[in-house]
Image (cartoon, rainbow, N blue to C red; front, top):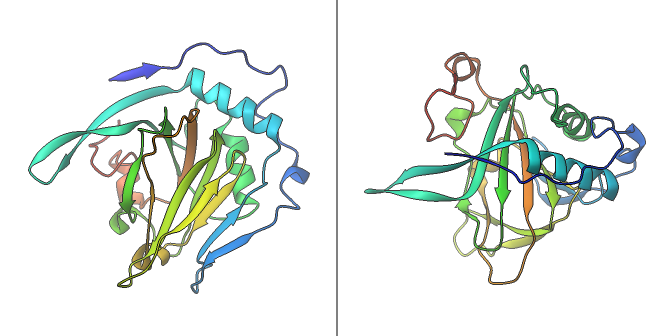
Length: 226
């Protein structure tokens, strides 16, 4: 089911443009270590006005989908709205190329897909998980750019007794997770009863060529998208 965002006032500045100096001085917080860079968080990559313009444009223009997925012996509703794009066929009206440029300045990789998540309020969430390794090219990171309201992500090592590390993902921030970290850590966005505004995450990944050729560049439970 497709859900189009409500029309919103878009800032007059061109949302596809971003000045490189907006993220050249970004500071990094190292959350986990490994030989591929681990898990890193940059809280102040994109300025507030640009981040807000991107959020408004994506919220209004993306064809958001309500999806269902199999879980054990039943099918459940996914508690957020989603969309997926190939980076070699981006809709020109969306500012995903500028977002990719911001991410490439921090965690460079030959990204070929963008997965978008819309968290409408505190009830929308994603359970603790690691990305499915067969859907990723080894050695390349997963990079997540956050827009809209801040939202807490929990990151937890898979070792017995490990405690979750909470990270408040600010609008305009970038979180990069190495491929190797998906073997050692889990991450998730917990539900909350707090009153929260809407949040969008844009997640850049490197998918294997065979999956791209088969149209399998969306969520791992989806079939071909083309």
